[in-house]
Each structure stands twice: as C-alpha cells, then as structure tokens.
Amino acid sequence: MARARKPAAADFAVPSSSRKAVPEDAARKFERRRARGSAKVEQPSLRRETSGERLSVYLPPELAQELRLKCVKQRRSVSDAVTEAVRQWVKS
Image 1 (cartoon, rainbow, N blue to C red):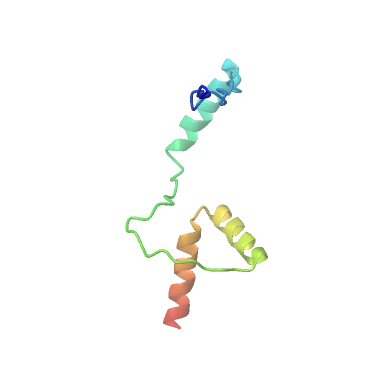
Image 2 (image 1 turned 90 degrees about the vertical axis):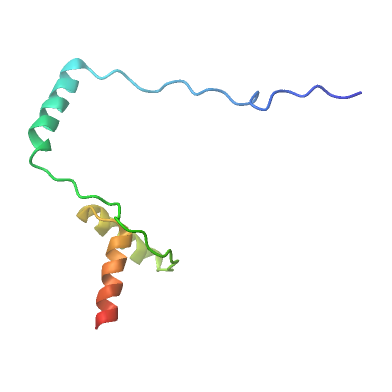
C-alpha cells in the first residue's frame, strides 16, 4: 500500500511580520535629517567598475578581523584595500 505524499512545502510555515509601525513624528524627523544631509554627503561606491580575477587568501583570524573593521570605518571594500596593498608591494 503506497503512502500518500504531502506537498513539498507542507512543513514550512510563513513567518509572521515582525515589523513595527514607525511613529509619525519619528518618520518625519528621519526624513528631515535625510533631506538636510543628502546633498552634502557623497556616498562612496563599494562596487568596482571593472571585474577582476578572484583569488583566495588565507589570513590569520585576528588580521582578517582588523582588516574588515578598518574597511568598514573607511567605507571601502576589502577587495579595494587588498588590491591597493598588493599594488604597493609589487611596485616596491
């Protein structure tokens, strides 16, 4: 006797929305700040205009963490920082 198959998604539940409504005054305050600073602040792009060759590099965990933190603080990608360091090393 063959067992009846259940639909593939039968065990998956749709998550409930965990978003909360933003109070109107907070939304207006956010919009004012964004409008005031958007013309003055130029956001750097973390995307490259040209693609490059993908390489795997193994770094000590503490050095990798320091690299990531410094890149976040400078708002640049890890790839750009590593590319700059390798260029300087190759030229020397």
